[in-house]
Structure formats: C-alpha cells, structure tokens
Image (tube, rainbow, N blue to C red; front, top):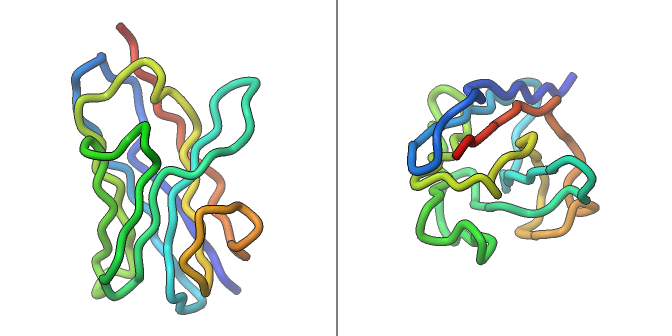
Length: 120
C-alpha cells in the first residue's frame, strides 16, 4: 500500500524559512511534486523533480525561494522554503507519479497535507 506522509509545517513569520518533508512508502516513483492549497483557492503546483535528480521545475511564485530535493536512502522528498511570504500560507501536499508534470491529474498518489502559516 502506497503512503505519503508529510510533516514539518507550522507557523512562521514573513521572511523566515521552513522545510517540509514527505516520507514515501509502499512504492517507487519516477517523479515527486509539491502542490499547495490556500483557503478558498484551487490546489496549485509548486515544484517537481525526478526522484533520482535531473530536471526540476518551480511555479513562478516560488522560483528562487523554494527548493525541492530528495533523500533516496530515506525515501523522503523535501521542500525547503526561504523568504516566506503571507501568500505562501496554504496546506502543502506531496504527490507521486510517473511523469514530469505540473498538473494535478498527472499524480496518482497524494499525502494528507501539512499546514504552513506565514504571519506578517
């Protein structure tokens, strides 16, 4: 049974940094992504990368501030978030799939989400 479990969310101030994690079990996947969903908004793409490295892609809103990475030995994908803004407040979800994509429907497996709140 495939499971994705996120952790590391919390309440931070604008300008702070935070790293969220996602542990993957029960399967292997070519690509891992992070999405986020703010209150009243659709779930949106944040970042994607190959599980073993290679090309990465970021949403324009986070490019240069966020970094997606993986630790193969720990079956974990990370999202390092720097220079956080109030607009980054959302529930952050990790997703696993077999294609390099920025659309939700490309991903078969999802975690339960972790809340990130950025105060001014």
